[in-house]
Image 1 (cartoon, rainbow, N blue to C red):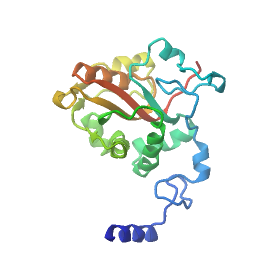
Image 2: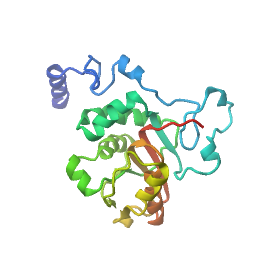
Image 3: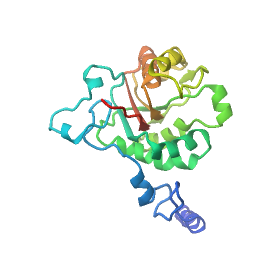
Image 4: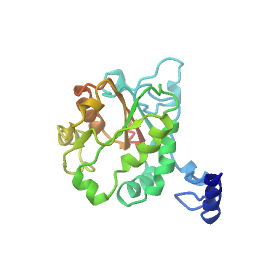
Length: 241
């Protein structure tokens, strides 16, 4: 009863508003209709493994695999992303990641939970991709942790933020896929293998670009005894296939 009254007071003092444009909405953290329509949300058809959006002509009723996954290139059990990385998603993802706009985390994580609607929710650990300590000190927060926390809560599983550590390496924003793979090699260390062994782990990150980061983290987790590793991101780079 007290909690309900406090919530009503907060909503009276701070009416729900779209986190992007400030327009009135019905629930804190949701997007208004105009902002929602700006994003290229990933629906069906998509690759059954990596969630890559496929042309509508690919919807044939059989299992759908993108060319990369058909060739066995995906290093995760499965991957899902809420939307395509484009001008609209970049306009919220970069300020969220680098500019302290943590208010975006609520609608981004809700979109990621929606993106998981068609996969087996059998993971027992949610793990945000860790930041190296110098970068965490500079930024003051790990954007992946802000996204992972509500996802773990929705799945009712443990959030693991300290079983893996990350060494500092140069930022990969402007690197080629090959350079990203070389830069990320050996960067992660499992410091709590007892909390990883036998676990089905869902990795959480803000954007999927080349797959180098999630692929390397998957490698060290499996080497440490994890049972399986999946992934979810808010957005993903989509290139012509």
